[in-house]
Length: 342
Ligand code: ASP
Image 1 (tube, rainbow, N blue to C red):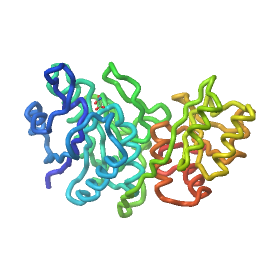
Image 2: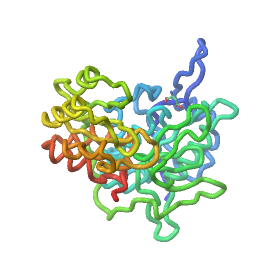
Image 3: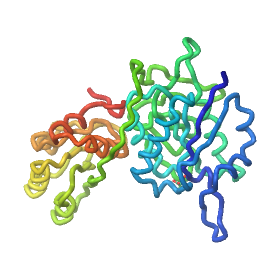
Image 4: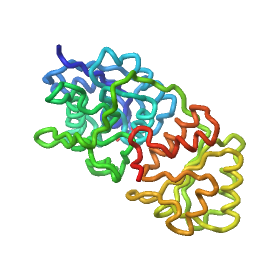
């Protein structure tokens, strides 16, 4: 039987065109299809569904992630794989979010998009979408099982794990990188899959989660961050979690006011996750004196997680509505390949 792939169209530059004021605005998928005759040449059935009105991904919200996951759940048995056509700006957040929502995923979900709209002569939309479709349809030559049963992101020539991706470029074609985990596949003349990097789980039923808790904050430290500004965020009445972007291998100031702010938040049950501002490397709480005290305050070390995966994981874990000690324990665990534990 012919392979069938569902494209979930959300918007983004790939499907945009210029309006009268010279600004890029999203088009509908039928306009895209007309510009991509190669879609008909693929050896697979490609169907398209709009998530809603196409949007610039700067407008994506957690409610959109829940709708994407619900749509995949609804269509899961009807299709062999899924491609999410999405703007690049928040694609890494969406891919990470979906990886947490789709537990025990047994099919491929590939996010892709483009830097240049599909109508542009030097567009990357056609190549990215065609290759993403091939990746979503890929099966093992031996055994015919799904090659990449993960939420991943294809861009330029790399297939990377969704919750390891980061947008690193707004001008060049190689917009995404995965600094702390090797790519799952590379598209050259042939598609080369790196099977050892792909996460294979024993087959079990897909479980689709349906909640994020948005009562979270993301605070990036900088020399000069004042007590007033830190308190204004950490003392928000309903704050339940916060990702702290610290320096280097997870270091932070040791000034008493800083420690007190964190201690008070932690004692109120706020789940704090320590993530590094460095794009490569990992948080090692205790390596320096300037991080040793953080574990004592109940702050979870984020290991080698990206900020995008950290904030979505926090919203996901808090959405499970557990006691804060249990939430902290889950935050320290590798749930979907988003961290490498030492
Ligand atoms: N602003 C666009 C978006 O994220 C950028 C892109 O798609 O490349 O929707």
